[in-house]
Image (cartoon, one colour):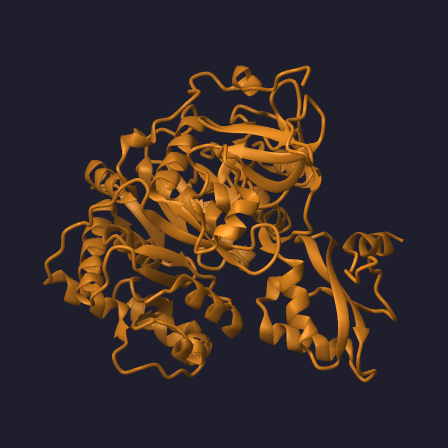
Length: 560
């Protein structure tokens, strides 16, 4: 190695950003939560459906909900799933679980029965808090899991009287968004659990740094979804890293306003939301960001100062009438992550709002932030930024040797935010974490002489659809189970709205198979964003000499 890239990035840190942070400032997320709710008691903490909860409200409600959970026999280390969109009930359930010492399993509410069964069984979850809209999915798999404690909620439960009754009636009776379900008689309603917990004793659990806070499910780079075990230290570190990085823009002395449009079950949104709590900000929870006109109205009336998002979200807003009329004078930081920010979107965003999109990079395995562009950046660079405080980055060749400036290799990350490992999968953990603490990301990158990291390509075949990881192995395994499919290969192809979309090349076993039949099957078995956008029937697939389908050749075929 003729040139050193060791911490060359430090020279480009914005003024005041420290080289390191100290996770020992807090024992746990619960410790951080208690300090924040005490320091900011009178400030608004969460807003949703016209209802606002103060930090004092959140403190009391999480205490009561935690008391109910522990009264049901739940103890430190037990896993509890949360399955709902962005509603006030989400942070209440989440921080209550953490205060009780439980491990939170964030669960996509759009999961099919197959996907939900895998996550509940793999995590060993013994409890779940679930929106009634998705209870029929739980019903289909409940007897195959270890879940015993079930708490159901409705969309409007915390919206306040009489709005809560109106919202719940409309959702259930008018819009008919709640499929019929049947769950065991011991199921408890969310508000009843809060009420019961009020009269029960509770003491916050004694949590240490290495205790697990979250199981965030991801495929890593390939294969079946695995739970990334994120400890309290991992999460506390990433919150402190974020605070250090944006300290010149966001100030705990001021009442910052965060827009939480990305779903809280996604690691990017989860950590950003916890960071809001760290600095006493108000989080405006957006339940349905796909309702772009409604989302624009929320933005227009919120005077927001910080918003994390993905490229597809920004692109959707830019193409929604009324967005360009918003007053952006209060906004301070717009953070793009989850997927690559497209240059065309970044430039149009700057032209419309006057604000740069600050691109960041991270993984579920890094809690997630690993590299971020300085917040004083004014233009889109195409880089994913600098390694943040207490974080190291390098690129390695296929022999594990560190590369020099501008030489591509696998991006590796080391820092206090890197996961403990994959839940109950030491073999999978060993594939991505080496003895020196480096996490191998599976992405090909270069580091330039200024310390900026730029992604070049993917080492693996991961497909990113609207910021969500989609794994070809899973797609192929599911579609291959169709009785009329002989074999197939799945790849990602460019897509104007979602960044990438799934395309499958299928060899028929039964010539009567149609694209419509195959898509109907996929919608039943997989969440919509995983489902193929394009289907191409072929006579044969390109394969290696051992019979492995060559996805790189499929990509060549697609390009042609």
